[in-house]
Length: 241
Image (cartoon, rainbow, N blue to C red; front, side, top):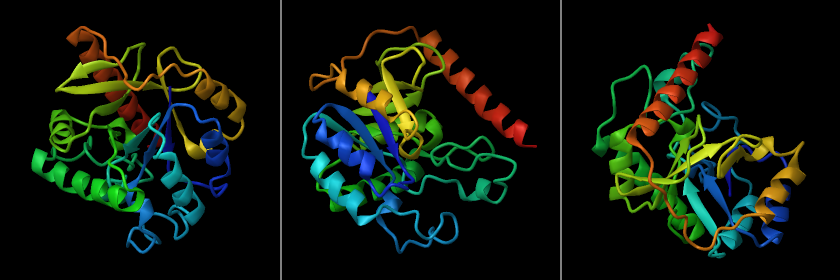
């Protein structure tokens, strides 16, 4: 199954409308603040025109009516204010968990997660089922907050071949990049241009039947995957310096 991380939309939704025409299962994960073009983030954190265009919003409203489409939420703002000040030296597109700041409490995380969820519900008329922590960065408090807010699925970055599994009463979807081995593929919307046909083929072949069934997995594998992911994030920032 494909999870489209919908952020920058340079084609005004042209590819998304073609995907919608397939009437096949996939996930679409949106960033709540991008529904708010007047938010102070535009012109400071994001370019002024980075928000979702009206055609994208219209297409999303139609898409989420399809029971085969799983709607996801990516945080609220999708950036870390502290790290944005040092964006030339470290990644800043995380929100639930930061390598350089003290952990956020369950209450702190629930506050912006709930705000984002409310915006999605108001703009699209449905509640997201999948929570995608920005940059796949999270801790146990994020998992607890997501469950308290009613999410069913939770996305993580798969550094090894892992099936969907249960954790903290959530179904974890380990996401890989196209060409890697795994069951859930993720892609940023603006990155699916050159190999668009490959993504269409992936969506057509989806065998999702209304429910993603988790499998049993050893806790040691979950911990190993988390360590590998954090090592990659740290190396990314070291390479910037």
